Length: 287
Length: 172
Ligand SMILES: Cc1cc2nc3c(=O)[nH]c(=O)nc-3n(C[C@H](O)[C@H](O)[C@H](O)COP(=O)(O)OP(=O)(O)OC[C@H]3O[C@@H](n4cnc5c(N)ncnc54)[C@H](O)[C@@H]3O)c2cc1C
Ligand code: FES
Ligand code: FES
Image (tube, each protein chain N blue to C red):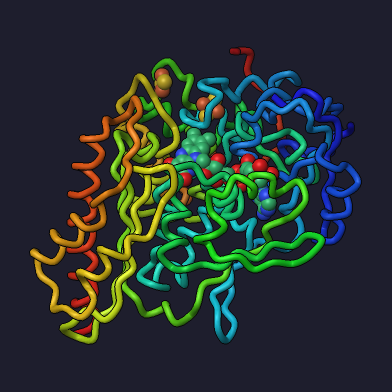
């Protein structure tokens, strides 16, 4: 519980929110959906800044990027047509993978990124699409997902900087993708996540992005798996080889949900099936 | 601090200390319809509508509701004038112990407000976050489907008249 929380602020602009953050030093936090913060224990926090009234809930495109506002609810990401088709609907699928409509109505894109647990759903999808994080603070910064996600220093974000939006290159709009989670139940955290995007020129795979999540401390791209796919007319043997390559040498974590061996096994099967499903979809559309 | 919101159609101004969750605030003020199930975002028994969207009030700071419109089960219908959803839930035998029902009804209300003619998967998705230990869900699914049909035909016994709140039942 945030037992010393006494004040709420409702800024309508980003500079206003930053000024409040600065005034409270490290004693204020921003709240978006509140689904994590509501359960957080931190005696330092005295003020909460609600950032959902600053116009940061949007989905739009400019010439180069798809732009997603940081306070856009996951349910909106999951249900918006544009996102259901952009890059094979990867962002919408990852958003829809999180449990229950009630939670998705509250949870925001920004909150999901800042939280970034090993089993989080949005980070692998954003990594697959090389998303850029737009941070506003004393200086404005643009940081690639790869660098941003999981770095402990960013956990302090929201106490001095605000993530305002996520940008994804429109060059990826035509890619096909597949997002798959292996978990005990719909609400249980993932034991393994496979997030893949492929591009083909009819017969041959001309681009591959392969990301594994849920099995190590942080989700990661798998360049060795991508190499097994690009330039080939893909078939079952390639998916098997790529899935093996993705998991080769990875330091899989064990916890009470799954042993190392079990995770390794299901992750490999999940990756193989996900690649196959993605390719079927890619071929179907290209022809 | 003062929290101002529209609660079941009426403007209210309530004192809050700061850290309390919306569920605490509601129950502390006599709105016992929103149930404290898991307090973890899993069961949906605490579901209320905020600006028309179903959220878990156990995962939502009371302060986040400032300036917003909150609807609880007490705002859905009364004993004398139940909401069509409440009628069909009873009629279809969708209620056993009843603990999950207020949350379930709020989720169903969001669905029918947004999508008066839902397809089967949409009904399932809408009720997905409401766990019920008694019924097996089939009758609740059927009740929502029947409500949609009746509301579309205008044949429900009651009508969703958006009536004002009644400080509701006694059960806790
Ligand atoms: C029951 C339950 C099940 C869950 N299951 C899943 C799951 O299956 N997969 C999954 O990935 N996640 C899951 N989660 C975690 C979920 O993703 C996060 O709780 C949620 O997305 C956080 O978003 P929020 O908007 O509610 O964040 P908040 O709780 O509002 O904030 C979270 C943190 O991020 C900071 N923050 C929020 N927005 C910004 C911003 N724009 N700029 C800077 N800082 C910011 C806040 O200060 C805070 O530190 C689950 C959570 C619950 C409660
Ligand atoms: S009490 Fe809120 S989801 Fe269970
Ligand atoms: S009727 Fe008993 S929990 Fe649903």
